[in-house]
Every structure is written in C-alpha cells, then in structure tokens.
Image 1 (cartoon, rainbow, N blue to C red):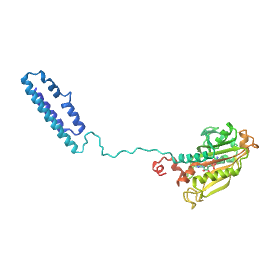
Image 2: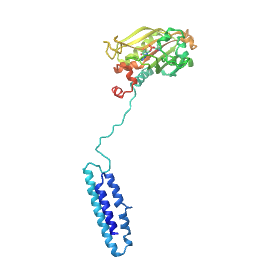
Image 3: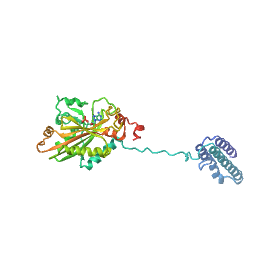
Length: 335
Ligand code: FA5
C-alpha cells in the first residue's frame, strides 16, 4: 500500500509540475485529489485496515495530500504569473460592440415621402413588379408601335410579361378596381435595360402619385409638387418646371431641382447642367380614363412619378446612384 502511495505521489508531482494551463491543472487535481481519486479511496478504506497498518498508511495519505495540495497552489501561482487567467475568462478584454442595423438611405427617403404625401391625404397602393404589356404600356396610351416605347428600354420575360419599367401601371390597376375619388401613391422598384451611370440605374426606386376626382386642375398638381419639394429641400431650393411629354398625361411636365451635389456649378451627376430631373407629371390623358372605363367628361386627375434614388442622392449629396446598390457598409454608414 505504501509503495502504491509513493508511486501515486511521483506521478501526481510530475503532472502538476508540467501542467501548461489552469484548465489542465484542474483536471490533474480531480484525477489525484478529487472525490473519485485513488488517494481518496485509500483514505476511505483506512477503517478496514488493522490498527498498525491504519496508522502508517493514514500518516502517508495525509502527508501526500498536504504535499500535493501545496504543489497545486505553487503550480497555479506559476501559471497565473505567466499570464494564464484562472478561469479562462479574461475580464480585462474590451467588450464586443453589437452590430446595430439601420434602414437603407433610399428606404428612409421613401418613408419621408410617404409621410409628406400621407399628410396630404394620399394612401399607399402596391402593384406587381412583373407586369403585362397592357398595364405597363397599352392602357397608358403606349400602343405596340408607339415610338415612346423606345424610351422605356424593357426587360421582357416572355412575349407578354416584362419587368415593369415604371410604377405607372399601378395607376391602371388601382383605377380598374376602384371608383373616384382616388388619391394614392405607389412606391416600388422599376427596371430598365439601360447602361448604368452616375444618375441612371438599371434598377431603381420610383414613387407614383395619382389623384382623380371631378374638377381636378393642373394648378393643384403644381401646388402639391412645390409643397413637397420645399418640405424636402427647404423653401429656397431652386426648382424648374419644364414642358415634357408622356403619352399618358396631357399636358405634361418634368420637374428639376438645383443639383445639391455641385449647387449649380455643374458635375457628373447633373451632366454639367446644374439641374437634376426628379420627376415627370401631368394631367391624366382622357385615353387612359377610357382604357379603365372612366368617363373623361366626368373625371379629371393628375399623376406624377418621382425618382426616389435621385431624391435620396440630392438629399444626401451622393454623387453616384450605383453606390445605393453596392451594399458597401463603408459608404452606407456615412449617411
Ligand atoms: C416615368 O417613368 C413616368 N412613368 C413618370 C410619370 C408618371 C409621368 C405619371 C407622368 C405621370 P421618367 O422615365 O422620366 O418617367 O422617370 C421618372 C423619374 O424616375 C425621373 O425623373 C427620374 O427621377 C427617375 N428615373 C428614371 N429613369 C431612371 C434611372 N434609370 N435611374 C434612376 N432614376 C430614374
């Protein structure tokens, strides 16, 4: 028995001296001094030995326990002074900052627009991104042979389905399903088979507006657009209404804002003109009313289509629309 105790002592001492971490030290303690250790079993079996042997073995067990306990403390101090933390948990390490997500700047711009138009009594309507020729073109007074179709370079899916080139088809879907008065905005993506540049994406965000009732006039359209532009950009921002052409509105206008990137001196965003086109608008053409079964003698209305990415560029001074789709957090975090 005494020989076995000496053997255990030798093994435990060697293990404690060579332990390389506090975790390893703990497993050595469990093995040689723990509840299920051989040394503990010898200790518990002392009562079955005859008195003589009990005395000598008992003394040897106690001495060995004391020796190993002291050696355990020394090894722990040695490891801790060498930089090994006692629990494997280093409370001095700086904490990890949680990632806090934010809405995309174009989403925030849309939400701002929604709130302005909501305050003016417009509800939100949505439509499909995969459209048919009728809603995207024919009902908007753009028949197949009409040269205006060239202005909307289209991604066709098959002969009759396409990725909508603007949000105007939502006008048609809303008028088909409701009767006036109608006052809606329709936000969402539009797709054009265009080569992207600083101010053109092949995929971009538009916001359509439509108001139909009896006796709606062009002056109301102008008033709403000026009001919303001033809420966004401030009262002294330069605005420009130009005569425009859209097959689905008559008369039509395009509205530009003074370039907020170069403030009018000319840059790549405004193609050197000092102005950026933000929207197209006009009075709903009677042929559109006929296509949805409304009587053009009874109802009049206005419609507009804004480029939300362009508005976001102007509000944030961003000089390239493509940055909005690149998902580069270094850029997005600056806004
Ligand atoms: C239209 O899309 C018409 N549907 C707008 C409209 C609606 C007119 C209702 C009348 C009545 P246009 O192609 O001009 O029109 O586009 C409208 C706005 O979308 C532009 O002023 C511009 O701000 C934005 N836009 C157009 N093409 C792109 C593009 N490739 N990338 C980013 N924004 C664009």
